[in-house]
Image (cartoon, rainbow, N blue to C red; front, side):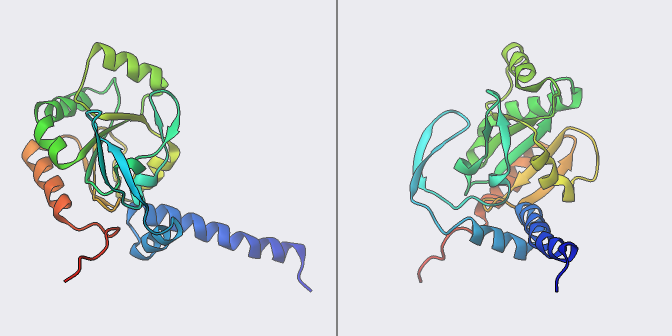
Length: 215
């Protein structure tokens, strides 16, 4: 006869396993986990409208969100959200803070080369400011940066980048492929040539979520 302790121990195994699959599959650190996570989120979705960083709406065949596209974030209105609407396109995420001088330098580089970068990727800012969305909004009103989608960090986001985040510093630049997997994480500034080339190459890599072409 099973004891209560034995039953509880057995019951916790699926929970721990599921958490492992979500974290490791979401970051792309475990290919099998990523496949399981993609399968669990369902196959395919109908055509949908996608909003770019510049506010333009384009209609395209939606790609099943996976990896970083499913990680919870908080927008500057304080509402929970994800980047699911931007799945299927490379993404450049700057992890920054309003008080961080090196972060402002990275933002100035992105702003100067905004046109070239936005042509090959969705540009995203994730702030770690403890003052919350209001602090970031006030800063951006006084010091407008590049045309990026702006969000606040969450514990889930920190967990998603942790396998590749070897330094507890900002700024960080996170390069995400069309399939939602992190391709590279850099600390500090990168040259605009490096950023553009890496994002362009990611765009040329076929998303795992896209169907194979006939022939």
